[in-house]
Length: 282
Image (spheres, rainbow, N blue to C red):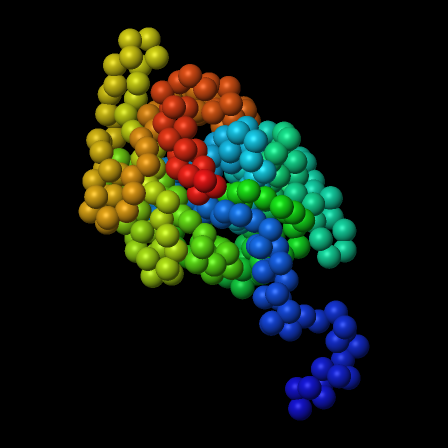
């Protein structure tokens, strides 16, 4: 009966079966060497900042990089890269990602909203459809790395990304040192384990404040929470990124910290993350 309905449907040539959809996304993903999803169980830990600096850092090292922002309700990547107001080229059936520099291409819902004041009031299935479209219909081409910036938690967006990208995609989990963040981030590690995705490592952000004048370090939030969590959960620990007012200014003004402050302590900490990611390509 279903086959009869399909054969008489005027849209039958435009309709993709489930298998055809899977084949389509596989064709996209087979051109991407490494996929890294930046996660956190807690909001406000600097996850998007880490994702942007990781993507730009890899691009500056000559790697071809895609940066996908799937934070539907708070897409901050366009602002962090000073790309507000940019619109991707859209044709029937495909979209071109927005270029940033020579080796980085970016896609975010923030490029498609008519206004920065527009609220996105979507239920899960619509968000899942958008994420699939960003993977299937964006012309990513051949990439060394695809970096995906997810919203906090273990809900629709992170789950959909991990399932669509497959078990060969790695997770970078971002936390801050204090216990209230660690409790939520612990769930992100369990989330990856249940899905069968490997964890590249934990990044502890806002890990103390280094005075730019005297060099003294002050642990404002706490100390070593991310490292202790890594030991507890038996996952790799990558780096501690200290607080730096320039990171805040970089996000506000849309320039990339790792590019403009390469000699700072925070940039050196980010280099540890780059080194870990580059090991995937060796």
